Length: 237
Image (tube, rainbow, N blue to C red; front, side, top):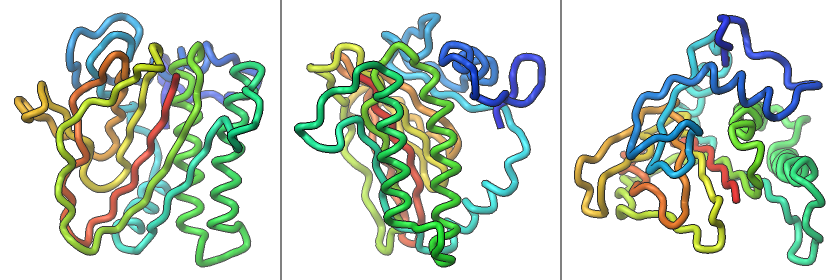
């Protein structure tokens, strides 16, 4: 639960501008690592910013994460601002964000129907993450939110780490990405592509980094057999 600078709970987003929502969210951010020179605006011209939200009463959501650890909740859902290639671009950022979250919810409803009792735990977990994504989207009200992906994977065999790499944004000079691991090993960061001074993030840490001209050096971590990993990915252009 986000808390504002005065200790109160995060206010309803109804009838509030994106800028006002972003201000409240920033007030509840605790930066835990700064990779590179971090300017006033989080995520701009920095290698990466890793932050946590101030703790709050999240027991029901934590219980779902425990359930994810113990059960097979595999599946991926996605939201995008272009349902089809020939769909006209959104007329403004409000419409674009409505499209992204609408297609994301459509994917959840299609794969995990509200009336299916077997799908209920997975559905509740995903809807909780969608609520988080809506909060994090307020960090960049001036950017184009174009894509959201929530992946839940249970690994039956040891999964090796990805190679160290940088995301590039040649066509997106304002591109920014947000990653948050909810359970399982977190994203790893390093100074270079051989893994110098590597840093492993823990579950619950939010990673924000630009992708133009190149983003922070990072990789998906090694994942042991039997582990479930739940990850939120957001793309801003």
